[in-house]
Length: 402
Ligand SMILES: [Zn+2]
Image (cartoon, rainbow, N blue to C red; front, top):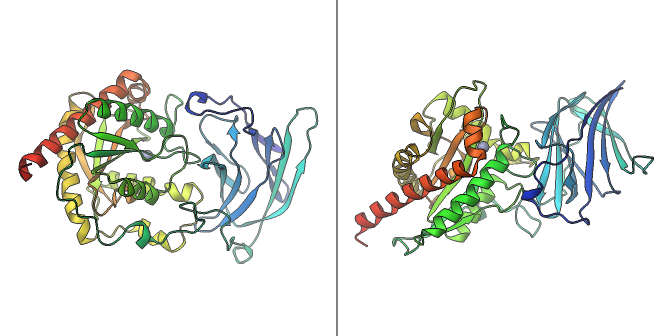
């Protein structure tokens, strides 16, 4: 039996406040056996689990009460047997999630818990046997809500009302929503220096909020305050419900070519400006799938971005903001050539809030990773954002005569 074990200490305790009462997962092991693949969760106590099987692609989702994962820094790991890869993290407050990418259809053939023996850990055991595609049982009733606290999935119409709020006046202190990309069991891009994207984006967003608020000219809020998963459409809904005047999603990309560095600012478009932009948007739009959401009938919309007429105005403003932001970033950090690009990012689809997505640099490049991982680097990004925001709103004010 081949066993793969991930048992590094959790490297980011500073990001989360956990008490001794929080259950701890201490190991996630996938082993290959004749005829079946075994997943073992080592935990400091017995845990309630909810299991879901999803299709397109085949995934197994295990929901646990909120736990501390004392198992690996990266939040994702290679698999074995029928498990192609696995990810884990906070799905929402109170629920931690493990997502297994399945290489083929399976069924749960055995499921049992073993009490501590010597190691002090409970072992939660899941045995998976390959089955024919026709015998794969998709979980019909999702055991977890996708969005909101009422346990139902809001329809796209509820999330994105067709009639955007009219907001002709520029408020005295415009509200900037900063959206730290990824989170929870969606770690985003791995980091060359070990810190995955989800922590980098949160750290930059916090610094940007501090710098923007300190200017006294704006209010700034985050879509997520901690290492928790947020569906892409939920990020939009939060910003719209909060009355955002501008939405800035923060990301850090990763490429095979480790020499590539520099920031890029993306705005929404039906057609991507180049193949790289299209590939990036496809990767970012997959966040909900990676996190174990059953997109069901929403999936085609994720693949094909259809832009409504109402969105054009917000898109034009976003495009204008991006053009002002790029030179301000360039004064402070490395920026790529043709730094304003276009692609169909789901998170930029708010019909009435100008939205941009900033890829702050490449985590696959050591210098970029070090810049984003340093306090000074994060401050330069934050100051670049503020300078771009200043130019944008002063131009809007000049144009509207207010
Ligand atoms: Zn990202």
